[in-house]
Length: 264
Image (cartoon, rainbow, N blue to C red; front, side, top):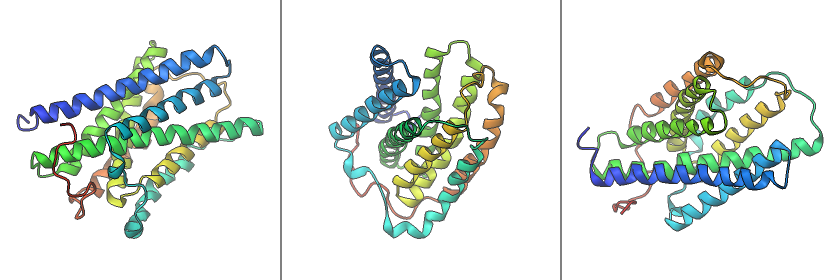
């Protein structure tokens, strides 16, 4: 463990934590600002996600990371069957369909894709680009596996931000942290194996969309860990699936052959 805690690795973790906190701050500021102009929660949430997406796009541009983003790899099409597992959660997330106006359905569709794009760019593509390179520079035996575990852990911890708006739901938020970690491992492993982010953005967006249209708007908010335990159990297979996909290190580099530290 001491070998991992080098100044370079510490800078990488610090950079990611700082950017995560900045993204959360951008979302919070957008929510507060938009609430003066709009009263609909969906519209406010859309403003939050647009602001967050703009933030991560600017961040990727600032760090010149575009060459590290693997959008869609035709050469890895034979591996795309791995997306069937995360895609199955589209149907698991359906629990009845409640009527919504066409305008609301359209707005929700735009919102969920923007939200999914922001989260996948930041928590998968951006975070993995930094962590994989750092572990490779440290000559770790399993740089991809370690990067997936660390990035997913940070992804889970980011959900602690929900305590800002719901301070009385600690148990439920801890459940969110846990199942977000499981989801992160599964999704990140699929990204690494297929070198394709776009399918994950689509799957992530559709999962969120199906969750939205399955809500009546009258469900009580989850407050305890027991309220989220079902989701934790359902998401656990994604964790083991991700570990299975990464049972061997990928034969092809995800980030190319550049050997300089990304955080220098």
